[in-house]
Length: 427
Image (cartoon, rainbow, N blue to C red):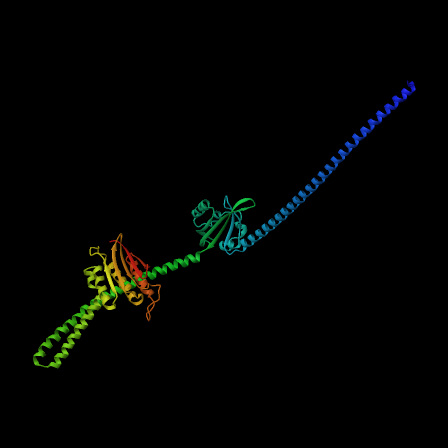
């Protein structure tokens, strides 16, 4: 057996061995934990670096976006300032009257120089006051009408109104209005164009046109009166004289025939034929001046007679279409339609190169005369060696129609040709 000292020594050695093994084990554990911790720290460091890089990139993008937004805002503000400056210059320098008023009470916020020149005020006298207070509206009801249009349509384009200047002169204005926003408040931009001179010129033109129409109608009336007077003179004087002359020549011829002077009798018979020919020519002239059947038998019969004579003279076939039961018009209306048909046929033979013409009288709510040809139509080229279509003739036809309360039209026919149409109220 070992001695106690040896046993104690063995125990001590054994204890040291155990402690050594324990220390070695803890060291290994600590080293493993340290390694794991180091690896985790490395991973966290890499992740942190990645996040820093990503955040930095995001911040750079955000900064770039902010810089772009700031630059855009600066450009917008600069453009807005420039636009406001241009608007201010255009507003001030415009030759058309421009004003800016409050949307509520209509008080002037600003007016341009053209407004001041037109109405005779200074800017300080106008700003802050309304058009009603200044007495600018010739008729205040027109302002209410303007506001109603503005409320209904949102804007006003071409509203006619009358305004009074400081001196009392009345102006004819064409007004335009648009809602705008100024310093965050609703306003109205109102422009006005002075059309007083144009209105007066239009009125003078209308009056001149009416005078010309009256003169044209008067000319037509005088022409018809002269036709009637000439027709009566030819019938009462020359016609009767020729008839008497023919009778006398026939008597002389009969007596000389018994005496055997053949040469003289032949000369007298030639004279009788000449007198008869002259009388026939005068009858034709009388009929042309004032067709007797127009008064006796009516428009349809007069047109049929004239169409037959026209066809004989020109070789153009003319058909008259109408009902004998058509109610007769007034004398003035019938002679107007007859003359229009005459003029239309004259135009056909001069310009249309037509072979056939239809003259139609109808009643279907209106009394209508229609003269249609199968020629080249008015827009085409005139026939060789012929004058251009007479605008005076067209105007005369139109005035004749208007003088009896009718409407006049010239229409192109499908397939060629022209139709002259006159519509009158049914009798």
